[in-house]
Image (cartoon, rainbow over all chains, first blue to last red; front, side, top):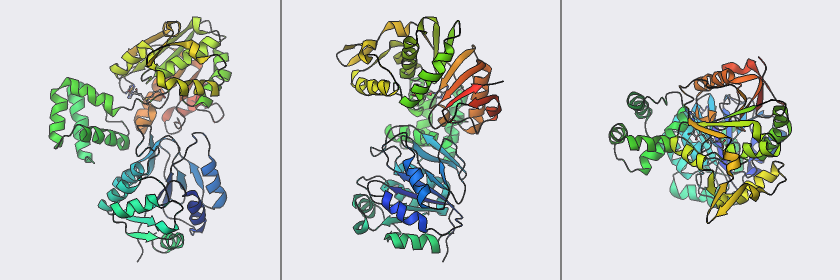
Length: 189
Length: 269
Ligand SMILES: C[S@@+](CC[C@H](N)C(=O)[O-])C[C@H]1O[C@@H](n2cnc3c(N)ncnc32)[C@H](O)[C@@H]1O
């Protein structure tokens, strides 16, 4: 069964970059939804993450600024030092308020905001990390009818974040990298 | 999370009772901030929250303080200050008198950073820095020029990363846990309340800094504010925004040219 999706949002922390680099290039084009990546990143000024993803995939990567227009078929990466929010289905916005879970961007903040805007048309994936960020956001996504996927902890470099999400929310799927790719290519549209 | 219609009723109440219009603030951010305060103060019904706001002016002030984001730093984004120092300040040197406006100055760290740049360029004596915000309590802090001493390590690192070569600690005197900045800097500052939503232009400036304020506004309000800055800038004056802000989505972009990829625009007509 196929499922309509306007936004695929991926959250990750320590150990998630490699997973992103592995799965994003395997997504089959054209992509009828937007992809937003929220990972904890340190350096304020670099665009290394964007550049690396751009290098590895055919999917265009756009640098996010305040009120950047969200469009299908494009990858957007949350900049460091700002929370990434969804103003409406076509507009991103940024917010410099306090860190959440010691993080800015926080995955919870973006997941919750996406859940409220996209409701059932949202698929969220939570990857490797050493932080509890993401779990609350997963809960909101479930309440709003979106799909939640967690990386199988045994396959994560740092299993804490996916494990925490599994214990404290009830994710729809617990997937390996290959299963994630499969799901994205065959189930969502 | 509070409902959209609850947020709308709060916006209406605040406008009716206090004349402050949150209607064109960015909804996503405003909703989070209002929800945070609602949870923090332990209300169990939204109407209690509304009642409190309406009937208690002190609580309304708290709402404004908590809902607006006041996070700031000295020499925030050192690379921005390096461009300001190396490329913009030298252009101001040719003016007989230098007027700078910090719109949304919060607790003033940005204004003191600017004063230091001007001082080091030998321009402070002929400069005036106007610093405005809607929040009266941040302006009180800004006026004092007193910041937590524990921040000085970061600020001094930022200062050096932005190209500063003086001894940063010579700009303040340390006392217990506070750093009081020299009055030589604050003597050139004027602080006052100004609301970007509804107030008009009050002077002509050579440089306007409005950093990390527009992100909290929707596209319509951003356009209004850019128009206000256009009205308040001299020809060939500069507008500086925050590191993730742009005038691209506002109506006024044809009046300005951007300095490379920096967050600095020159008014060209
Ligand atoms: C995040 S601070 C920015 C401080 C500083 N410019 C910086 O970049 O570090 C945002 C400030 O904008 C102010 N602000 C919000 N709405 C405003 C309005 N309508 N008019 C004027 N200032 C406003 C807030 O009170 C807050 O102090």
